[in-house]
Amino acid sequence: MSTTYDWDLMERLLHEVQNGAGHSFTPRPYAEQHAAGLAAKGDAVPELDHLKTKACEYEKLLFERGFIETRPEEEGGNGENFVLTQRGSRLLSLIDSAIPGNDHPRQVLNEQADALDEATFDEVASKAQIA
Picture 1 (cartoon, rainbow, N blue to C red):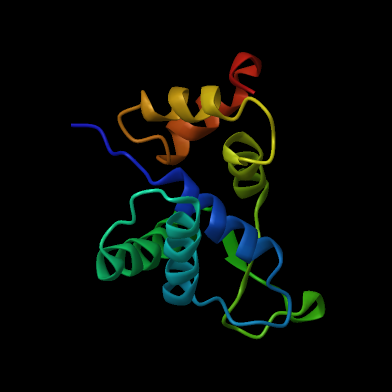
Picture 2 (cartoon, helix red, strand yellow):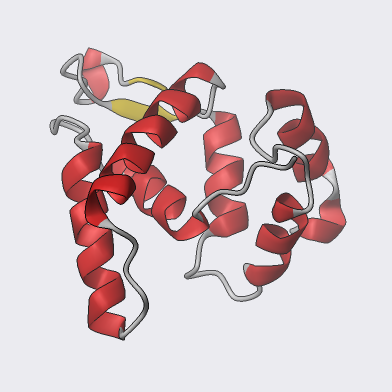
């Protein structure tokens, strides 16, 4: 069975990490904002508690698998926020909806048993044709 991810929510979390100097990382409010954004676009909105839980699970997964790490104090770290690692930056560049053609990398990632397994992701992200 393959693991599928909500790439839009994942993208939101990664952008919050990227812009999080001096702020605590709070996945639940980010999930609420993500849901509000979906509603504003007229898209279907997943059940909010489920989305908040998923955001917290993604935070844990991104940290444990080396996509994000604790932000150093000299970069605005407060012990409750993160920076993107090189792996996290690659993930964001693949799934970023602001970049034209992001559908193909997302599709390739979805075809993996678990696209965010460290070895799987590193192998897939190294293939130039998905970028």
